[in-house]
Amino acid sequence: MTETYFAQIIDGIVTDVRVVSKDFLDANPERYTGTWVETFWNTEGKQYAGIGYEYLAETQNFRPPQPFASWTWANNTWQPPTPMPNDGEQYSWNEAELAWVAI
Image 1 (tube, rainbow, N blue to C red):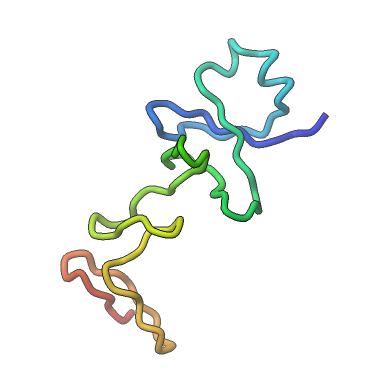
Image 2 (image 1 turned 120 degrees about the vertical axis):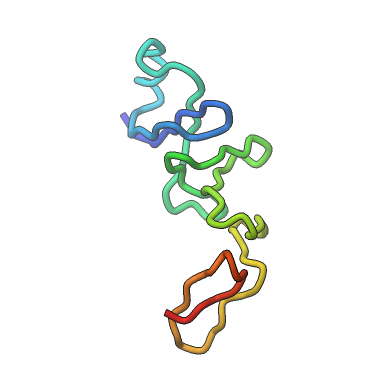
């Protein structure tokens, strides 16, 4: 019996993630109510589900919560309005200033 990972989806949001075989999931509908979608570790082009992630039915993939209001979703990742500087320094995003600030 192969164990796999399944995410429970309520109103498009992941509310639970479990390691369970598909057979066990199907045999216990009273225990696994609602919609359960398989999620994958280390699969190129697929995001592993986490609690609070959004399920994108059209791509059968998951999207993490938006880190800041100004960031947009592109190329399967959240993108800041301006790229983080690549100068060897460490930066943190400042949403009020919409800018990267050196730590």
